[in-house]
Amino acid sequence: MNIVFDFGAVLFTWQPGTLLMQTFPQRVRTPDEAAQLAHQVFGHADWHDFDRGLLETDAVVARTAQRLDLPQQDLAALVQGIGERLTVMSESLAVLTQLHQRRLACDGVSGLYFLSNMPVLYARYLEQHHPFLQWFDGGIFSGDVLQIKPDPAIYQLLQSRYSLAPDSTVFIDDLKHNITTAQSLGWHGIHFTSAQQLQTDLALLGL
Image (tube, rainbow, N blue to C red; front, side, top):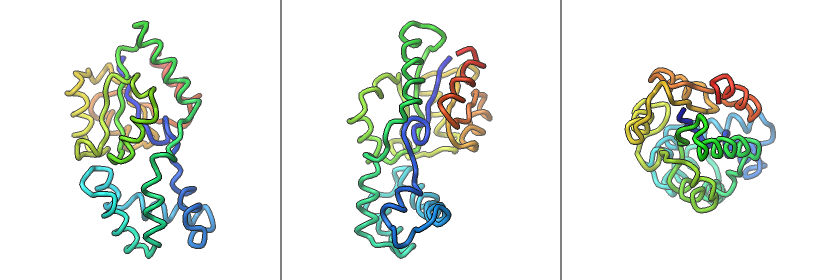
């Protein structure tokens, strides 16, 4: 079985509301306000284009600051520093470690891959600072291929690039709509909520 991991909120922490509360304490005072601003910043088409590799860092900062009336210097510091704020989720890493060991032993895991919506800036940071990424047999960051999930094209690109058989491929993601696309292509899908739940769902697939 080939196992494909999303990164944000699966292997690496992604807490946009917390980041915004810390960066703009005068603007964001409650979790509800943080969630609303997170949607306005990270759910907007400009950020999606940043994910997709179509918008440079300076441009997404300038556009977002103007659109939401945010201090541009503070927003720039936040956006530039997100890579180092994507810290490893230790329990998820433990699951990945087990799968890596099974991959080496040819014990039910034929390949480990990743498929992550990630701007190039953060993708390069993760590659440089987390040696365990070398365990993956391959993968795709959205910023490198100018496509993002849940567009089926990025899944199909991963599938064709690594000759993955859909019925022997499991996709793990924290967002249900990303899982839905994978399943529409014949992949197995696991909606990630915790490392413990992931282990349970993998066991149901014989892993």
